[in-house]
Each structure stands twice: as structure tokens, then as C-alpha cells.
Length: 114
Image (cartoon, rainbow, N blue to C red; front, top):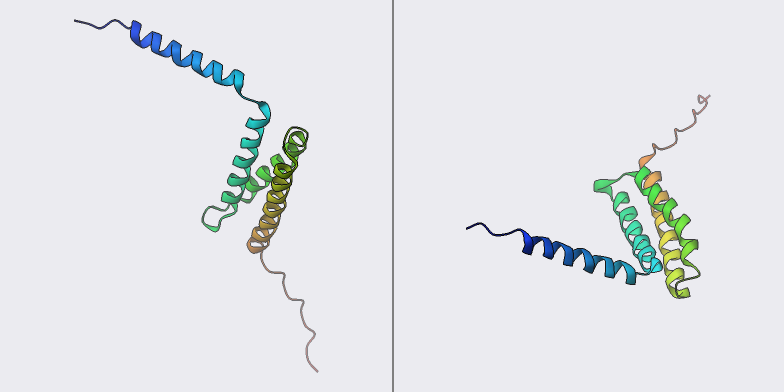
């Protein structure tokens, strides 16, 4: 005896309705905050020696710099301050990683000793 597809369809509809309700309750500022934390984690991950990807880390930094001002008016000041510190630390880590990847400057040729 074949089962009817109705229970599966009603289950999918219920899941879709639940998702719609969750989206209605979701605040944009909460999603933005989570996005900034995710970007910072990804940025740090792209700076680790075993998976270094400086262009990707730079995209994460630039996205943080662009999105952080949007969050300023809708989040507690301490949250914004913490994210600004994360951004500053990420920029410093990027500079260190970039310096480690660039070849050392060549020594100027010394004049021959007389």
C-alpha cells in the first residue's frame, strides 16, 4: 500500500510557515551583528599560517569597515566598541601576515673596501 504524499507536504508547509515567522521576528541589527562576527572569524582564519589567503582577509576587513558604521545606531556602545577593537586587531594581524609574506628588502650594495 502506497503512502500518500500529503503528510510530507503538510510537514514542509509547516516548516515554511515556521521559517517565515522566525524571519518576521528577526531584527536586521541582530543579523548584521552576527554577520560582523562571522566576517571577523573568517578574516582571522584567512590569516592563519596553514590557510593564509591575504586577498580574502582583506575582503573581510573591508566588509567590517563598511558595515560597522551601519550598526552604530542600533547596538549598544560596548558592542560597537568591541567590534571596532576586533577590526583594529584584524588589521594589525593582516599587516603582520603581509610583512611575513613579503621578501625581505635587499641589502644595498656596499662599496668595495679600500
